[in-house]
Length: 373
Image 1: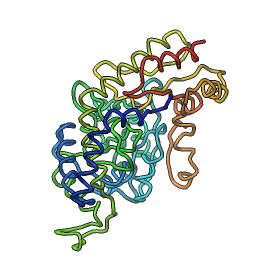
Image 2: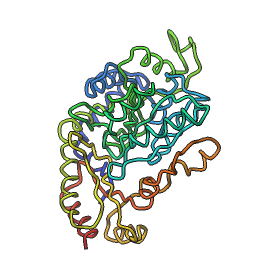
Image 3: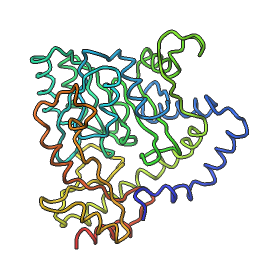
Image 4: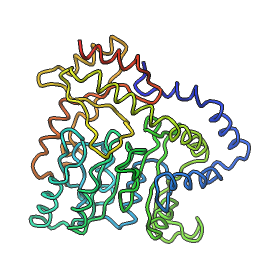
């Protein structure tokens, strides 16, 4: 059993992927080949925004978005305390100060009430200027953007959607990666839509921000790459990865999202009486299920359980074992209003189980049997 079975996916899509890669090898335009522009067009249409700019990875996508907004020293950027390091790393790299905010216990996503409290604290008790909110679509579930947007509008904050895990999710039919003033995603291989290396994308309806992101991603280019009008970075999606993603996007849209949601529903049914706290998807929300993450009961030895599952051939992962505000890298400059107690509990109890569109019901039943016995 694989945690996320990329081999099974390739076996199904092999003919199309091999042909797509062969076409790139034949035309030889490995950087900015025609597949890149085609992918950007299709991704923008899929998400429902005006612009998509692809880049080297999801972390660069976050940094590029914040660069377009001019985030830097003296700015406060609000980030969930329970997330991958990149969400807080990107603002810190630009000199901004991350302010870590607690999350909801069942959704794992940024808590809008705690966000409001954190913004008021920064406004009233620090010299920082509230700049932006990084809201993460953790484990595939979009954050509560209707509520988060209200906080942003009230306090004049820009909203950056970190959709690295959320691509394909939606709220009332509106797609993930369209909720932010700028939104981003990652094409890391294990993501809902993944390539065979690193890759990322930035989404926005703003002509100005899209142009800035495209410039910053190629050394701050102006009219051409040797006309440098600002200091940027080097972050491009290569043509081979774009070709792979075009093939995968067809399958993702046609049946993979539906398949992974069926596996998640089967998990929830099989584990209903297991004593585990199961993930929830609020009414009107749709998850792309990057992970299926449960919470263990108090007193359960997670390491022992993982060992027992491994002995049965069941791989598991812990996302994430350490709150962001306790990462050594942030010790010099950060704020965390109340210690984020929900995040602390989650870090000690979460366990992610194998899932994916090529997982089958037998796999889910086998995992559930071990957990339920």
